[in-house]
Image (tube, rainbow, N blue to C red):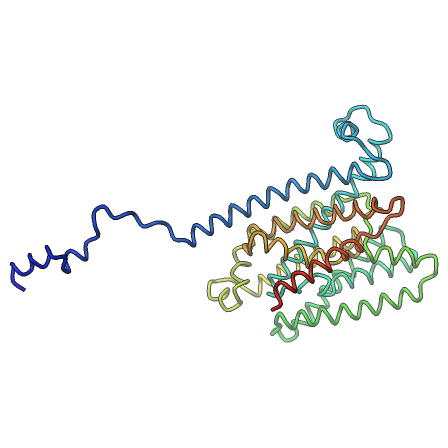
Length: 363
């Protein structure tokens, strides 16, 4: 191309002109995906703030509602050290431990359910499906049948839950090639065996103890006097799980992807499963068997804020605590002075919610 031809080509908008962007061209905007990600994080933080407010509201309702209503002034006096009468004593010695235990155990069950669902990549994974609750029931009812004191009943539930955990993990591990499906099926089988053992103990129990055994199996927070170990474990468990949130996000995409990106999947599985089992064991030891919290709450929170474990785990913990605290308050006030097992209310809430989610996502 001659010099004159090249000049004419450039004036006519040829290759030299087309390769150069116009001077007044607008700057390229940020990608739609980053904007959507910012909106999603903003919504997640709003949901977290709303759950914090809901937790405060659930505590206030639990402390003030009951056969003897407590006013806002009496609540303030109960915690400020002011002059208080019977209302302050009821709040501090009865309602506060019960509300704290319900909130802590709801958070423990929801956090354990979220961890199990990520670990097994199965939305039906739940501490109760994996047989942990069944083992706790066997230990606790065995202690009740033997006439043990309250402390030994809690110890029996804890030992039973940890025993079932070790049994499920050992049987599923086998020769070292265990899979998510194998672990889930092993848990179902162990849970069925624990159910048979519970039925046998109920049939052999004296008539005077059957009612207490059945009430414990359906969940009961009325006899809790020391909820602080469960609350401390909830905070410690959440603090232990959050550093692994990135690895859990990668594991949720698939084991091959997680391994390719440097995640030690075997170590992560063992840590998460052990933590989930410990959380469930303490919850069942404290308030008995309460179903559907670990199954439903992670689903609902995931629909609201997405599947980022850095936000999902604390939000699920708060939501589970709010649900069980509110359900326990309703259980002792709906048909007062009769107190319902809290597990009955969580089942009445969980079944229709689960059916709704199943109809919405049939696959």
